[in-house]
Length: 252
Image (cartoon, rainbow, N blue to C red; front, side):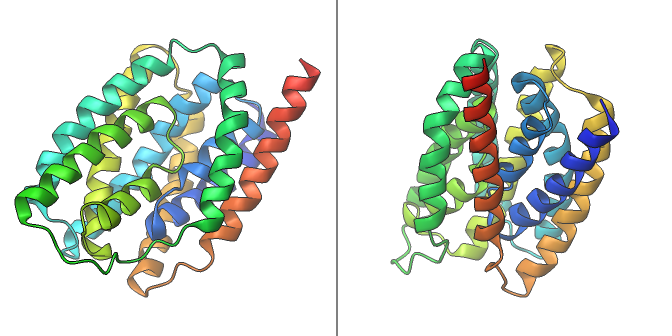
């Protein structure tokens, strides 16, 4: 690792942590940061799990302390998220790096379109019964958990949209459950990547400290109801990442 790589990755991981605490989807910034700096795909995913997991742990603690987490429902989601992320992490190790980059050429434009069109708001719909809400939330935890283990960016935002739109949760509750699921998927897939030698600990730990700072300030920003600065940051990093991927594939 070089100093330039640290200077590229750490500030962007800070921004990713900030965005993740406010509205989810911080991985849309933090994972591309590693790859923009030249870290190989599988190493980037594994190391990002370490740094993002550190920040997510802090945010989950803050949300729990402020009473945003329904632990009875969150416990069931935790189990299904663990199963999904373990499956997804093992799948991603089977995909060659060049194939992964080609897949991202399709994922990134759709993600940009999604970020432009999406508004993370309360659903405004009538609440379901507690049992039905929990079943839908567990299904979302498994599906998005598998996605997070396989790739990851956008996990928090996808979860919030499913929990508010499909499970009819209020935004505050959905955000809390999202943190429980996200922390579970991060730690589970991180274990898989560590066991397969796909984590750069020196980089991940330093970047993780920046992520923790970003999560801290982002969660305070969320307490004040702010989320307007999220989309421009996401879009800027995604466009830079897309250009880099196209350049590498053409050069290759």
